[in-house]
Picture 1 (cartoon, each protein chain N blue to C red):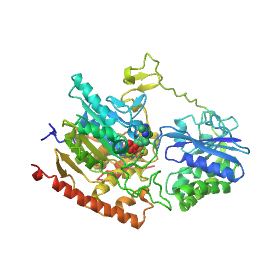
Picture 2: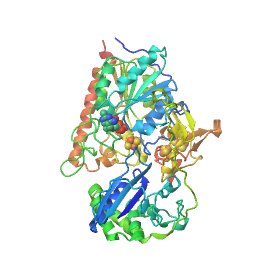
Picture 3: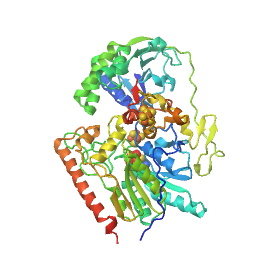
Picture 4: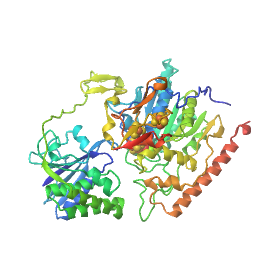
Length: 312
Length: 298
Ligand SMILES: Cc1ncc(C[n+]2csc(CCOP(=O)(O)OP(=O)(O)O)c2C)c(N)n1
Ligand code: SF4
Ligand code: SF4
Ligand code: SF4
Ligand SMILES: [Mg+2]
């Protein structure tokens, strides 16, 4: 049974995105941060009739340090662990007040989403709460100074997965949070990237216009934590998709489609741009390459298994 | 005992500089501590770090409010922050600047040394990271630690973080800066306003602590109030736009994380305005422009 309603888009593109900034200049993100690219664009699509929720994360700090704020819409923060249920509570309270047309969106980091906030997220998804949840994925706990998260990829240096003579960065693999969210059978799950803006805008608009629980995970590089040139934020995000390190797909009512078919370029170029991978041995690069191939193979099978014609 | 306060920006390595100075002093037989100021700072925002050195054991754990020396890694900070706040009258300021000490304004006329550490860093490291070069200037200007100890301090602290090879380059930066430091006296004509902060009393505190957009004597507060925060001073490089090459594709406008690029005009007269008062100089716009219509310049 289809759980969602809506999802129609008028096809917002970079050309038609409104000028008005609902997330203003003067915020204090590091130069070249990927997260504000996501948030600026998302707020332009969501519009003024929106309430936002944030757990502790870089965005919370650079977007607002009381009494200053970059958001021109209501902005709430309770705890790190419970973004999804707080957003759901806000939505239900607004409904009770008869304000059913307000968009409620939670923006959270990868740590706040896939690790610390996960039980709340899972619960809200299972109950199909009517909210949009956007995770900007910078692959570590950046706000507290670059600690590894479940979303940190294999081999990456962080302050808690140092690269030295005994270990060479993180020894475990990136947690596939989008697939876990798909397993919740919510109306909408999608991945996006700041390197593929047209696709990102389409997905945000689509998610905005749906009802029920909607989950978006957007790849948003962090030049500070990734130890890279601030000018390359978008370029590195493109390379992640082209090399299969990050896959763009979406699931609407149980039907999964690939948005961009990965070119499966060698991962080397992607890794070489980032200081967090500087220490990698050839052996480790091979492991990462193998991971990307295997992930791609699994993704294609997954898309095949959940394609339109397999739906009863 | 002498106390040094470092002023830099997040990412410029003020903390590592403070530690390397402490290590240098320690290697000369002193006791020394170095520590940062903890805040919510991001790369580019003003930050502080401290070094305290003594012949005897150090028990004081406080921040340094009345330093003997201040070290400023970025002279644009002097227009924003009262870096000389609390600096002792017989103290000294060591500043990364291409200006002469006599042309530096600190709101207080004190002994002052300048060195163009950014140029030194670009020459020796290929990057505008000035935390090692400035220590060469400190050694030259104060004579409190030798340049050899500074080199040893840099090898110790930088070496353990970024490896011996890069540390050696940084040690060289300090040596070059040592030779290029000039010492004099700075100006003290301007007065710094004591930066206030909006502190509402309980009657002004909004229900549930949701601030409304308001003008206060301390500036805007509430939703959208960050527009008052001019982040443009964070940059080293600034975008220069060539309208003749530009096809108004809007990519730079879309990607700018700081919303510093605006479209102005209508129809054929449409062009871009770069709001450098917000631009942090990340270079994404120049990197992504399909027509190469933006160049980053110092
Ligand atoms: C329960 C709890 N644990 C730890 C923290 C400290 N903390 C604040 S932000 C943060 C990191 C957030 O990481 P992520 O969610 O990935 O967002 P990012 O900062 O990377 O954007 C941590 C660990 C906290 N505020 N609350
Ligand atoms: S640490 Fe990373 S995610 Fe946080 S503001 Fe800086 S660049 Fe952005
Ligand atoms: S990206 Fe380049 S061509 Fe496009 S609008 Fe900006 S400056 Fe013009
Ligand atoms: S350099 Fe960065 S902050 Fe400045 S205008 Fe370009 S994209 Fe925006
Ligand atoms: Mg994160």
